[in-house]
Picture 1 (spheres, helix red, strand yellow):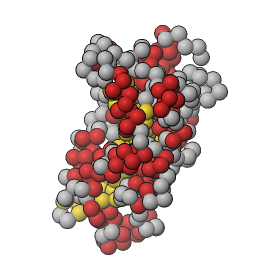
Picture 2 (tube, helix red, strand yellow):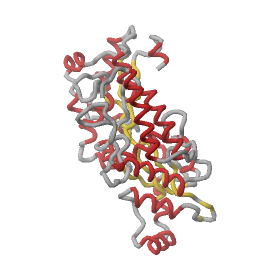
Picture 3 (spheres, helix red, strand yellow):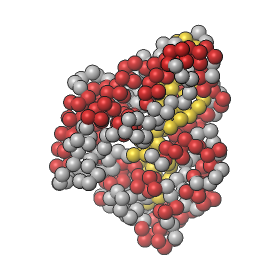
Picture 4 (cartoon, one colour):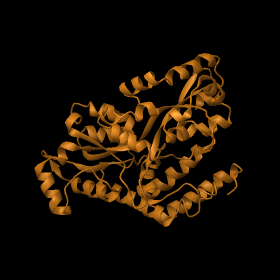
Length: 371
């Protein structure tokens, strides 16, 4: 972002976070790709719809393209498959909950599993339930809590009236979702988990501390190859359903041509090359996450990796954070409000979300948005 804002010449292409696209488009930092796509026969219909909206479009849900979907990603979960398979675990879990232990289909089931493992002894070592996102400094807790908020009915605004947030951000059901996330944090996370994000989650899982881990699919190939917790010991599942449905937080990026580049012609040729079907297949085979329908809708795809089926399902139910030019201020506001409630025990969930609406309204008002 510093490079873009300073009109630097370091990069010809940028694989930029989905939240950057509004500011980069409106500030003239990315090249609009519509004419190039048309000339080269590159169709956005060839990519998963959620990735086109998330990584390419600004304004959202309009045919204005500023990137080619490059690295699909979403929040998913890993679990200790080997722990679930232990006879003593299976027996004790069934005695406590009256059902077999297995991949959770709902957030309530996930909490039961996390609570069951919290403080349990496995092979002489005390273990814990779940590693979840709680980090405050950048985007961590927002990327985590969203997976609960969406499933409980939270919406960023009124679908019929953009930027009208009252009763959507702070609805009674959204409040319950925020409360449920705090309950999971309080009951079932390892000691010292008050500022955890991607790397802390990986550390907790790889060191054998936790039964469950929330993290982005981008890390799953490496985890599967891990000599200590990978292979037959690890399993994967999608974000479970809540009372209002099932969704998950979008991650990932599109690839854009920098408008200040002196090598735009070559950069555009790279995008043309990268969009090719054979290249997209190779991208997936190497551990990248293709967004191309030709890869993801291939009948063999669900069996092409241990987490492929879950990735495909997740990319069909992703929701993204605001991609407005003011996304950084919007993100800082949510980070503070949610962390204060979930981790620091300040106020109620209703007060946190009411405060968030107030913060967001002030930001949008300054931007001249009407709501």
